[in-house]
Image 1 (cartoon, one colour):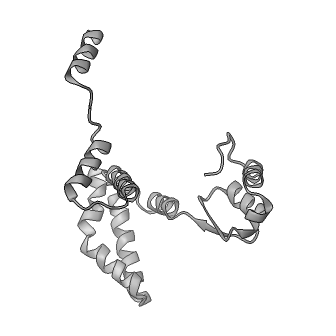
Image 2 (cartoon, helix red, strand yellow; image 1 turned 120 degrees about the horizontal axis):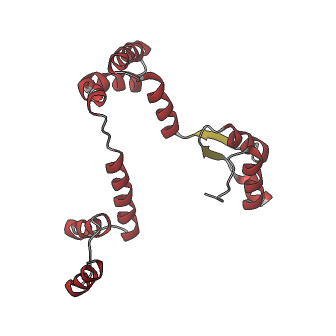
Image 3 (cartoon, rainbow, N blue to C red; image 1 turned 60 degrees about the vertical axis):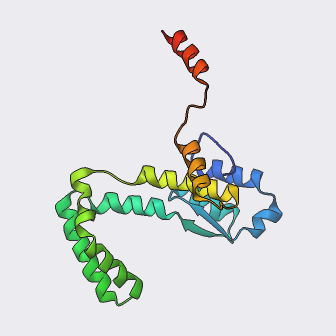
Length: 171
């Protein structure tokens, strides 16, 4: 994150890149991870021509899931076609992915019945990883657990007297 600006245009992105990075630093940039916004792509090409543009996997997955899964029936057909194609490719990682997708087929397609995801849990996992990194490791699981619950549990650490006073003010 270099700057916050109101526009998502190539001109605004170029201005930010030029302001935030002096020419010596710009010359050292090897790659830039960005979403698919064309303005950002053009800005990177203009200001950092030597840098590889790396499109964020999350954005690609989001576009693909919107494009190929409007209904359970469609998703079922697309999933099976993709699995057959992946297995025919004979590329070991794709064959393994196809086998895994087939093994978990019912769970994958169940999304269309329930529309739930693990997004919130993944966010919690990111916070937990930050807690672990900041602590430089924990020797005891109960200490890690306490830190996680303290951070994610939104504990009310006020004294009972303070809580009572707050309740009296609300009433």
